[in-house]
Amino acid sequence: MTLPFDVPYQWVKPFFHALDAETAHRLTILALKKGLAPPSKTVHDPRLKVSLWDRQFPNPVGLAAGFDKNADIPGPMLNMGFGFVELGTVTPKPQEGNPRPRIFRCAPHEAVINRMGFPNQGVDVFKSNIAKFLSEKPRPQGLIGINIGMNKNQKDPAKDYCRLIRHLGSYADYFTVNVSSPNTPGLRDLQKREHLLELIKKVKEQRTKSCDKKFPPPILVKLAPDLDEAQQEELAQTAIDAEIDGLILTNTTLARPDDLPEKFKSQTGGLSGAPLRDKSTEIIRSFYKLTKGAIPIIGVGGISSGQEAYAKIKAGASLVQLYSALVYHGPELITQINKDLIALLERDGLESITEAVGAETN
Ligand SMILES: Cc1cc2nc3c(=O)[nH]c(=O)nc-3n(C[C@H](O)[C@H](O)[C@H](O)COP(=O)(O)O)c2cc1C
Image: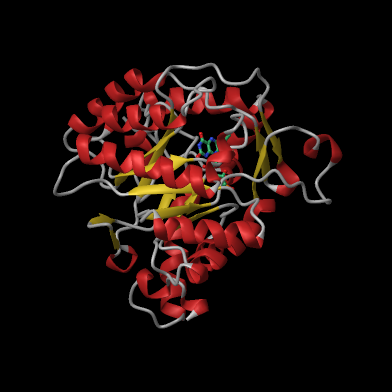
């Protein structure tokens, strides 16, 4: 079912923004689950197609992790025009996450702070939701990434990541090993070279056991933006040594730019949206250079326009994702970004979005 008429997001935004951010989000998920979705406006254009890891992405704009943690609404989100959606972060066992409130908006800065702590219904519910979606016919075009994480009390992280690959191995077009959410104690320690090498080795062994042999899903690693130069160099080399298939750059930041209002910036958690934009683009540029473009990058952080998506692509991202901008601009943004990307390709005389990847550094 779709809405009988197209309600512009700006009409319903005041209602949603009058609610606590998480309540608004839950209502959105509920409405989409009930089929109350705007009619599909997917942009079909061969110039936007991306071929990566032996997979075809209909366009380069994806939904970032955290929006659909339990795989409740992959279909409606793809229908909004995303080329791919990243579901999760899912953990093996269900968990509550941190006490509410735990998501905070700052509209004048188009920013969000969250300290969710991976609330989710666990792998069993996730698996049955994703299996149901994949069995539907016809289903919207677009690919499914699954973002995996560890339960809060897990002392041996690899166990959780491997368990998730074992259960979900046949459902993902790609897996994201999330080692960068700031709200799970100890998670970001997994970004240290020795820990990451060990973790990726185990995850890959599990992939060999649990996934399609001919067409195994790529393993991507999602990193934080809060990395100094030495850490970036070490991690880029680690990604090469571990033969990681791709990087997602970046997760939310712990930094707090000065110009944010005190009441907002004093909230604990990860900051996303516009204030993260340049920082994440810098990290993309840096990793693209350090890895000499050998490891595909999904760029994420503060994207709210075609120009901003294009800036990340030119800095080295093969695909992009967004989350926070949906809160401020609604689903129309996805179509707009894809249309703007086509206009930018035309302006630059390029025939495909892939030609723009890393163009600025070439
Ligand atoms: C409320 C909220 C929850 C999030 N949850 C997750 C998560 O579970 N796993 C993850 O890898 N990233 C999570 N993220 C981070 C986003 O995927 C993304 O990396 C980050 O928000 C930057 O993109 P944006 O500026 O477009 O939002 C979350 C972000 C927000 C705002």
